Image (cartoon, rainbow, N blue to C red; front, side):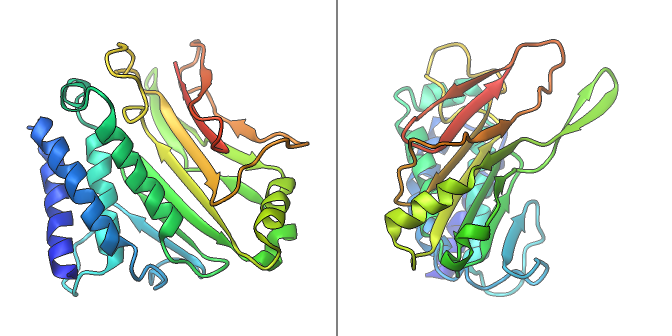
Length: 265
């Protein structure tokens, strides 16, 4: 039930916050995430009272409510636990998950949430944590021709030579993407947009390649049930270089997904 799911989600958050993370922590977290996910997908259509109309945003850290647990609270704790794992020492992840199976399972949980969370047409749900930002958006079929499609996980700040610089990565998609998706799914069907931004590539990098310690950020975007290809106009990535003087590369992880890219120095 919800009380048990919230207890397990809160325990996952506590367990992954510990500085004493070990292989058992990763195994337990991965096993429990799937159970918790079921409850995180139940009643997300209820808008957050402090959010603008049509948008539900969860932000961590938060004050724990005294009300009965909701799927909103469970989803936030679930994503916070994943964020904590992304902040774990690389050696723990390599020892715990040499074949990348747990990393794939964790990514599948994130993808399942953005794919299946119930949303009304025209609404958005977003969860922001320290190392992870996820967003799902349901596009009203009547708005396809007028919908600007831009994704940004928000601004980042970095200390450079005692100066704090701010930059905002963005993905801008041509209008034809929504029209292509609408034609594929049917003109009366709403479109589900799925986004995720990771502060590092620990779920994606090959184990033992010696590069996981680098802070390479990852952005992922997709449209549920649609393969986007043969675009006339390009998808535009704006990925400012947070390391002046260093060369930055974009690396595509999966071509069948509309955009999953890594960037870093």
